Length: 260
Image (cartoon, rainbow, N blue to C red; front, side, top):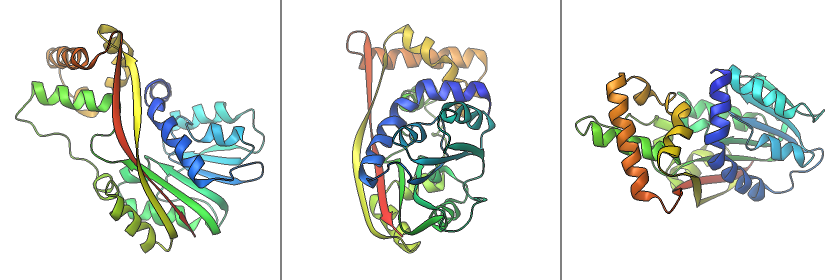
């Protein structure tokens, strides 16, 4: 929720979210000057900023004050764009307001994910498009994969943290298409594609991700000795995956676009 977390997220997770956003904008098509765009759970602006640069009128909403503060700064150069603090499950917006709506890695982690989908589609205009994206498998992409593997190696008898219900449901391409159609979206197209997260190898990886790891719940709950053990496991995993001075992490995203 904090300003610090927003900056940490931008520096780490946007490497993945930005790739998903690029595919989303391409598949939706025709996001240009005058297009009314809603970015739900906009995070650190991986989609909002490119959409604004295209000339679109973007409203970026997020429930985290730190993210909204960052988004406000990012969108300040664009007079037709703004950021607001808002719960994606309860959008304080009029029906059929936007030409295109996006929820990238957002609705799938909402406690009431069906309500999130319904709200997104409610504010999409008739004939407009809605785009939803999530990960194909838990725990997602990038550093999350390394951390979950490290936690399992240190605590083999502890199961992984439970993935949100919406994550598991919408990770299935057929289920995602079904849920969108159930919510009265038509011509739903779903695809899977690979994302690539690249970072430094060795201790530089741990140094770069130290701030990010503090916000991963399963790691944050550990005591200092346990964290040192997990850090050592992270380094072992990274060393095993590294090629020279870099580590490359690949994960599959699922993206759907439908028309209202």
